[in-house]
Length: 255
Ligand SMILES: Cc1cc2nc3c(=O)[nH]c(=O)nc-3n(C[C@H](O)[C@H](O)[C@H](O)COP(=O)(O)O)c2cc1C
Image (cartoon, protein in one colour):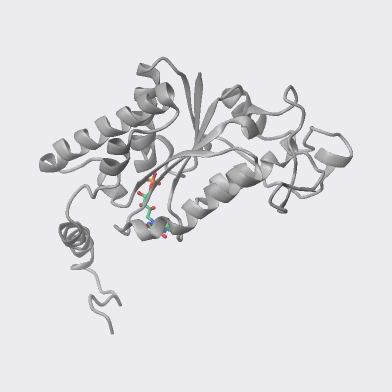
């Protein structure tokens, strides 16, 4: 069993996303999985040009050779579970992760057929030719700073549609709306973060052993790290500590 994570945070190893992924993969490794944590922030991945050469001229080969895509794919090769990890960026996945995903076109079968429900999609390739980038089951690992679950609405829809189109399934979504608390927490918050990290490890273990998170793990991972009002007070207090000494146009009320 191999679990590969594509980390789409521009902050790479220093990011809040990395805290979540590290714990998740620790659990997966404890359960015996081979793991790979791949930081897009450390790679140069060019945009898909949309030339369709990978379908029509050199099937299965991308024309872009002068970037790190091959290296990322080699590290993720053979993954049974592919986790896509991202900070929320304007209510969506990060642009880094999106650029990576678009380059997966090279693995798709170009033909468009109607499935049993009458919906159009690219069919699978032969079992031998199907890339693990398409075959792998998907996990979403996402965090944001706005403090509420509603902000994950778009990314949750997105990963489900991605799985549907790629003929795979989403086996877990792990979402932390108070993600900015994860790196360098205040001393009194450390036990809360340690507890959350243990839950993430448990999620990783459960997914490797049972292909799913347990119900209790899932429920507990959706709980706030700290009460919503306390979170808002802390975050806004943090902004005050910078802004009180500066002239600025920001108001702290609905106008
Ligand atoms: C440009 C930008 C846009 C963001 N948009 C959102 C957003 O729409 N919703 C949200 O909850 N957080 C948003 N955030 C906050 C990040 O998701 C949050 O800081 C996250 O912890 C960053 O993860 P990282 O440290 O791994 O990069 C945004 C941050 C930036 C820099």
